[in-house]
Every structure is written in C-alpha cells, then in structure tokens.
Length: 327
Image (cartoon, rainbow, N blue to C red; front, side, top):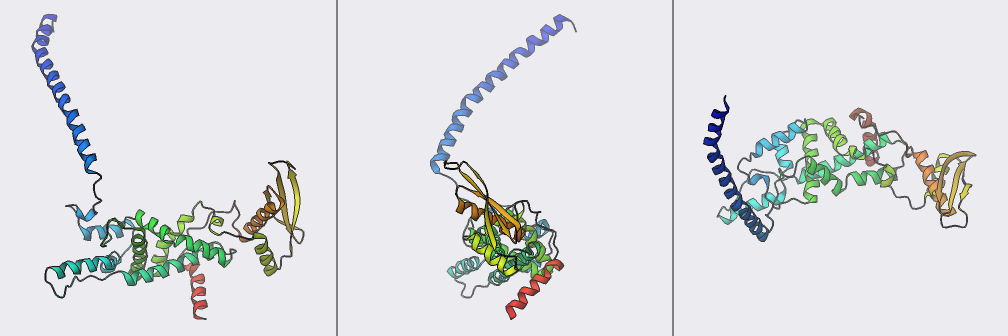
C-alpha cells in the first residue's frame, strides 16, 4: 500500500473516530453524577432488609432438600428431612394465616421437628462422649464432660449448622434465624439421619462435622482445673503412683521483676512434670498441670486425635454408658 493511499484512508476515518471520542466523553459526563446520586439515595434509605432465599423466583424447596442430602453424601428419608427443617413457629404462623382467611381447621400436612430435636440432641451427646472416651482413654470423666459440653454447646452446633447450609432451608417464623434455631436444626438433622440410615451413619456424621472441631486444638483449654496440685494428689493416690513431691530445679533473675522459678514434680522418684512461674506457688501449679497432661495423655506434643474411628470401635463405650444409665 502506498503512502498516498494510506493517507487517504486515514483522512476518511479520522472524523468518525473524533465523533466517537466526543460521544464517549459525553456519556462519561452524565454517568458519574447519576451513579453518585443513586448511591446517595440508597444510603439515605438505609440498608435493605435481609430476605430469605425462598423469596427468590427460582426457589425450589424440594430440590434444596434433595441437594442438602447429596452434598453430605447421606441418604435421608424425604419426609423426615423436611420435618427436621420445620420448626413449630412456622406451623403456628401458617395456621394463623389460614385462620385469618376463614379456615376453621387449617391442615398443613407438616410435622414440627420437636421430637427429632430431642432425639438428635441425645444422640450427639452420646456419640461425642463415646468418641472422646475412645480417643482419650486416660482422660478422667470430668475432662471428657468439659470437652463434650464445648462441642455440644449452642454456639458450637450453630457454627456447624450454618456452615452446612441449613440457614436457607429452615422453615421458621423469624428470619434471619438465630443460634438457637441453627443448633436445634442440626440436632433434628442427626435425629432424621439416625432414623433414615441407622446409628452408624449418624455417628459418622457427628464425628466428621462436630468432633473434628478439635482438630489442631489443645483439648486442655476446655477443662479449667482450679487446684491442679490437689487433683494430681487425688489421681496419684487413686492410681497408686505415690505422693507427688514438688522440687525446685532452677531459678533465674532472683530478687528481680523477671524472676523465673522452675519446679519439677516427682512420684516415687520418677519425674512426671515441670513448670515455670514468677513465684514458687505459680511454678508448682504449672508443674502440676504439666504432670496431669502427661498422665492423661493430653500433653502439648500429643499425637492428633484419631478422627477415623469407626462405629464398631466406639460401640463399647456407647454400650457401657447405656449400661451405667440402666444401673
């Protein structure tokens, strides 16, 4: 292409490019003020109210229930799963709506999850306790109970429930749902799973989603021991390990603000634990706590809990608990 032809093409297209650029500048001049005005009006109106997922046009409740079970790779009875997500407040609200339009005896064909909540709550406590008794066989019942209390607390169960995606499927009179509804729903789901697929699947569900919250956690943090030396003496006397004897084995920074005492505890001339403190009493308490961790098998460098324990392995502790209740 010659230089003359290129120049002629450039001359023909130049006015068109200039016109497009001017048009672009004109659009930019009114778009920015418009967006600023829309933003000002939106801020003036305040935040939008939270709407449930069921308010969307593409909502399909049966599909959501089916997808919930598939996500968890569990086989639920469809009616039981729907019942697990239906709270009494929702049924009461719908009955009131029908009564307001003149229906004397409203029938919804729905059952609330009150029974499943009771069943699931009992199962969760049993499964978590049996798992801990199997995974931490040396830990006393007080420590087991403290950890069970943490894992089965309302806040902990609500955390698990919300991350499993139950919030948008719950049928309740209030939205957004609170911690109590979330915790009750996960209990009802466990109860529905036990009735649908049996104890083994229900235990595996509790193990995988509730017990695994202890992963990479210090289990000693959930059990607060007020008098560690007294507890150590009681434990050693029960196990016939001898009388615990604290001994000072080190002192740094004496008569200063940064003093550090190092105390060790011996039983029958056997070292069981040590600890540091700014004074002797504090060092003795820390040494007693360290000794208890060593004796209970919950030391700081303990092996990770075995989250692959099956139902057969914990069944012995489940049956032992049931037998103790009957006795």
